[in-house]
Length: 151
Image 1 (cartoon, rainbow, N blue to C red):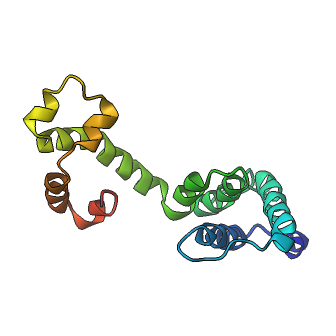
Image 2: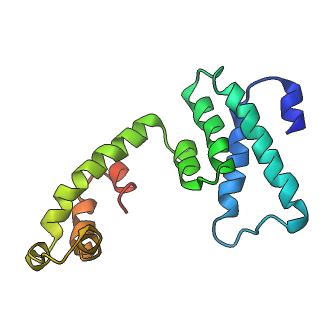
Image 3: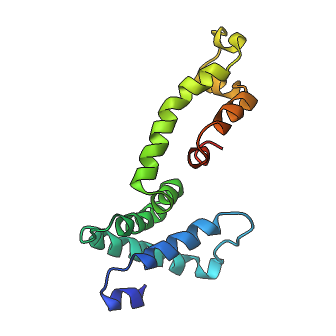
């Protein structure tokens, strides 16, 4: 962190590598931060988030901005938002949003009539009762680029 600050040059790579390490830390069998290092580790992420808060206003490249914004998200404990910021461009997020808007239409076609007629079925129950095999078959007809958002 100190080395990055001393350089005085905005570099998205610093932010991206920190968020990649932090997100990977929570996956699979990757180890937790050792207790003896935890306080300094978390402070370094908070310090980078503060630096990023100033640098994000100077950044002009969308990739730089996304990488920078992912660090305050990590520092604030919203890992999912950090993951979306670092992994997906604005165009990809808009494409996902369009797909999600159309999912109810796709899902209704896949739901057995008995579920649709069940008045006791709330929204979460409805989703739990979806016929997953039919949805997966329908998803397989989508362009492969879109499938990654559904499966």
